[in-house]
Length: 349
Ligand code: PLP
Image 1: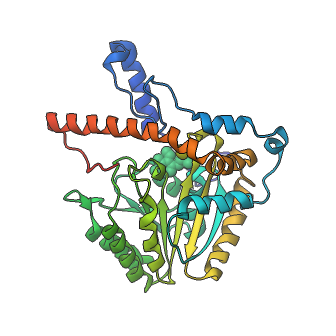
Image 2 (image 1 turned 90 degrees about the vertical axis):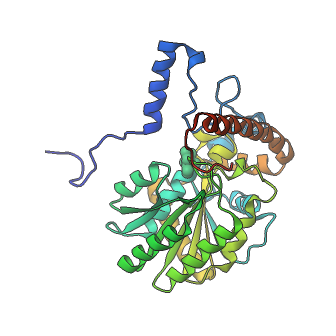
């Protein structure tokens, strides 16, 4: 007898990150804290070994009124000023000629889950990177999707040939494609596609589009830690070249951008050639939001707007200090790996 649904997945979540965190903790007790480098959790830690909480972000949050904190959001798709500011933040310095909408979500997780569940039927296949954040697979399984993967690298470059092959196979089989690209600053490798690689991706997706609808899920969770913040959004101009049979959903997360993991703020940004297609996706996404989480943390959205407008300069200064730490830490890892002959994936940022 079971109280949960018949086809429920009863296997306990085994999050490898948390498992390794536990092992690291044990090792620290056994060998002493200086003998263990614990760099496993997906949160930004300072040089003092504690979680970073940006002053500009949390001082701003603390200044938000109790009534704003108490209130529901303006709508199931999120507050209008938040939706607008997400677009400014992402597309402010590039030219994008596409129809678009923004649906506020609980972190990037909400946007990824929303895209998988609203764009595919149970039993269909979602295409994932071979090396990837483990939750993609878990989300797919939970909703009854099959998964297939594409190889990420060929000679330290993005494996466009395998990407093409796997997309084509999914397309041949189900005449619909949802494919995840976690870029820039891919988790866990730190790879970012070049402009030409992005051009190649779009051309492959347009080719696939001739056989049926294609949804590119671009997970940009770590974009705001790019080493090239002035030009990092430029690759998105390639999206202007999608055919009208391709849509893009950008999964945006404030968790890493603002070190506000617990506030659960993010967005699904939908792009397509025709407004009508964007409107249809918004209708379906909004309904899913209403049913799954209703609305997003009101003060969290307000906080993003204030931090990235009124306090933008200060915030970017504060964040830059930590990007510098990441550069130093990663160069130590890359150099020491080289010295001891440890093979690593091609790291960029
Ligand atoms: N995408 C990737 C690749 C991640 O590593 C994470 C978090 O670890 C997320 C998305 C989603 O994070 P959140 O839901 O906190 O925004």
